[in-house]
Amino acid sequence: MYLSRLTLSHFRSHRLVRLDMDARPVAIYGPNGAGKTNLIEAVSLFSPGRGLRRASAAEMARRPEALGWKIAGTLNGPDGAHEIAFSSENGAARQVQIDDKAASQVALGRVARVVWLIPAMDRLWIEGAEGRRRFIDRMTLSFFPDHAQAVLDYEKAMRERNRLLKEQVRDAHWYGALEAQMAKAGAAVHANRVASVERLALSQQEAETQFPVAELELTQTEGEMPQSEADLRAALAESRFRDMAAGRSLVGPHRADLYGVFAAKGVPASDCSTGEQKALLISLILANARALAQDLGAPPIVLLDEVAAHLDAGRRAALYDEICALGAQAWMTGTGPELFGDLGDRAQHLEVTDEAGESLVARLGN
Image (cartoon, rainbow, N blue to C red):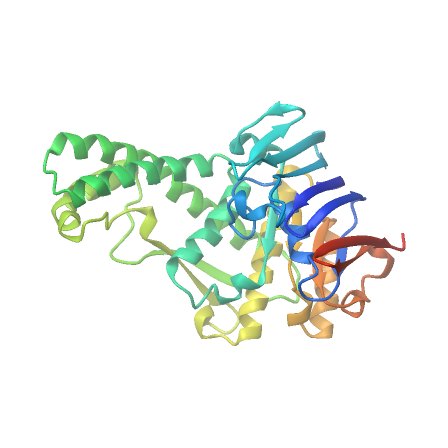
C-alpha cells in the first residue's frame, strides 16, 4: 500500500505541492519549522479520523489566505488503485471522495491503512489514560474499520446519559434505552480492543527485531471492565445512582486504560528510561504494520515523525532495515540528510525548505 501521487493545495504551510512517488520509503529532511510534519500530516488524512495532529479542518488551512484546502492522491493497494481526495472550504468539515464519489470515514478505512508515531506520543506511558485509549483505538481502527462507528455510537449515547445524570433525571425508562445502546456499542469497542492487543502480542513474538517486546494489558481505571453486552448493561444500571452523584458515567470502555511492560526486564513501561519507552513504541508500530501486512497482503503506509533523532546509529539502521524488509512506504522526517544515510537508494529523498513562510518540497536523486 503506497501513494504514487500526492498533491497539496493551500494546506498548512504548503501553497502547492505535487509529488510522484514509488513504493520505497520516503526520507524527508529540512530545518525545524520548514513544513516536514505538515507534509506527513496530509498523508495521515488518508486514514479515518482527524489526522496525526487531531486538528480541525479550519486549522489546516494555509494562512493568511484561508481559502480552503485540498489534498488528492493515488493510493495503490492489494485491490488496485484508488483516487482519493479531501477538501475543506471556509473552515467547513473535511469532505472525502473515493474514485470521484463522496465517501464516509468508514469507507476510507476499508481502502486505506496508515499508522504513525509522532513526538507527542513519546509521553504515552506516563500521561493520562485518555492518550493511551486514543493510541490503542488508532491501532484497533487499523484492524477493524468499523471500530470508529462503534466508538461514535457509544460516545453519543453516553453524552445523552450524562446529560440526564447532571439534570438528576430519575426516569428508569430513559436510562434503560440509552444504556442498551451503550452496552451494544461498548461491548463491540471492548472486543475490538482485546482482539487488537492479542494481534499485537502475536506479531511482536513472531518477529526477530532489535526493538524490545512490549507486553500489553487492557485495564480499567476503577473496578473491572464488563466483558459482554449483558454484563455492561447490568453494570450501567447498577451504577446509575453512583453516576448521578458524580454527574457522569463511571462504568464502561471510556474508563479503559492500557498497561505496558518491557517484557525482557519485567519493568512497567512507565518506569523505563526515555529511550526504552521510545523503543517500545516503535516495536508496537512495527508490530501493527506487520499484522496488517498479514491481513491485507500488503503493509500499511507508516509515518514516523522525527524518529531518527531519538535513536542511536545502530538502532536507527535496524529500524531502516526492518522497514525495507517489511516493504512499507514509510514517510520519515528528520533535520538533516545524515540521519538517513543508511537508507541510501533504498529510499526516496525529499528536502523541505521555507521561503517567506511558504514550504517548498524538492525531490533529490532517484
